[in-house]
Image 1 (cartoon, rainbow, N blue to C red):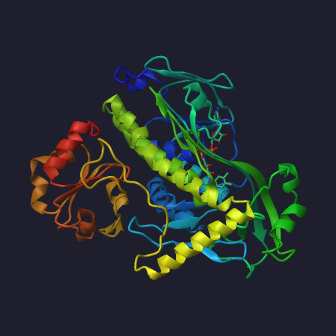
Image 2: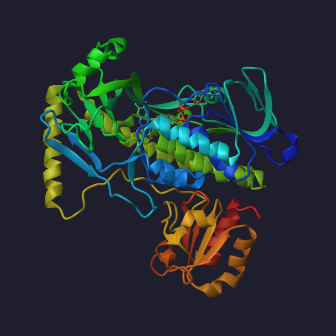
Image 3: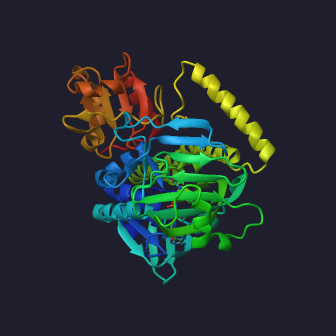
Length: 499
Ligand SMILES: Cc1cc2nc3c(=O)[nH]c(=O)nc-3n(C[C@H](O)[C@H](O)[C@H](O)COP(=O)(O)OP(=O)(O)OC[C@H]3O[C@@H](n4cnc5c(N)ncnc54)[C@H](O)[C@@H]3O)c2cc1C
């Protein structure tokens, strides 16, 4: 199942079948199409998922949307997020996380979205990039017992492909097809999620996200792009989900925040929030991404973001393997992504346990401890936390100084990524190094090679005294140091096929 060398482009209908045209499948299909990979993306549904889900994206996601060519138009319809406060039942601030605003990645750190609109813009971009989008018939069978994968759709269509990526959500058919089980972080809480459309600005609503840790009814407030506003309410033991999803119940639950008659109920749904990570993200030519591979409670607004990071991590590796890089490159996908995602799932579950406390005594103890911690932090010179620390990538595709997203300056009047395209980037401190062997080798692979001396806005990528920085096609820093040493590590990894 893992021999990738025997086929040529014309042996199969396509190179990659992406199962699922949700936000993660769409992102992957777009990134693959942008790299010239023949891509078919299939969804059993025609329309975008209609119920309330993702409301938040971060700067890394905007950078991925930039690559797909839709970030600026999306940004125009988003709402910058100034941060998130955790409140006690009496609205004492237990924890305050502030957003740093625009970051060195070139985009605001934190933004609220209206997911149906965001997905519509994403779908348009994916089609524009040339992915073959087939909607209305799901994947019914995946036969991966050979060097060509056979995918059968519900309507009987057969597609032959070199790889399949299951972006088919929490109940993933693809995950079942490869027999992957889930590691369960033992978090399972039902919540009602409500999207309202406000008739006019309402002064009693916060302009920052709130987690109200009230043991009588934990709830969340999210100021979405105007005129929308989201509430999320934890269901209490014994409450029936169907009874909670009525306009009357929504009015009752929101009454403490919202005067009557100022908003229309747009949509609502009850979800059970989980913390789950698949044990196995790949079986030969079949891989998983997004909710198919991991699910988390939405308290940090990172489920979809994590899936989109999967897509960015995988797209360039699939391109490289299709270009002749060793099959083992695909093993680095789970190795790199799983620790990253687990850190976020753990943090989201940890916050979930804080927020979902229903025992009044426990909640009082929690509040006292968090208030004491906040008071101690106020006396400390260290800056307040602005988010959760994300781990650096580790492993054979990262050298010294690598593993974090690269800074994105403006170079010659354009954003760095737009200048580089979906390629490796090599930055050298000294222009003379451009004619040296390693720089020439990189150029021969199709990488973009730039001198920070000629383009001084690149200097922050080099850091103190380094002579070279190499950035991977997914915009993560490969390494910082001596060019010949970094080049040797990259060559050994096999991740850089020749042009
Ligand atoms: C209340 C709530 C709030 C959230 N808030 C945020 C947030 O603020 N930020 C954030 O980043 N994340 C958030 N999330 C998480 C986010 O919504 C999900 O992580 C994201 O939608 C997952 O995207 P996906 O593409 O992996 O899966 P999905 O969106 O589930 O898409 C899967 C697609 O696969 C299709 N499919 C399924 N089976 C088949 C088949 N056999 N053949 C073909 N197609 C198939 C489905 O029709 C669907 O279109 C939230 C989730 C919830 C529930």
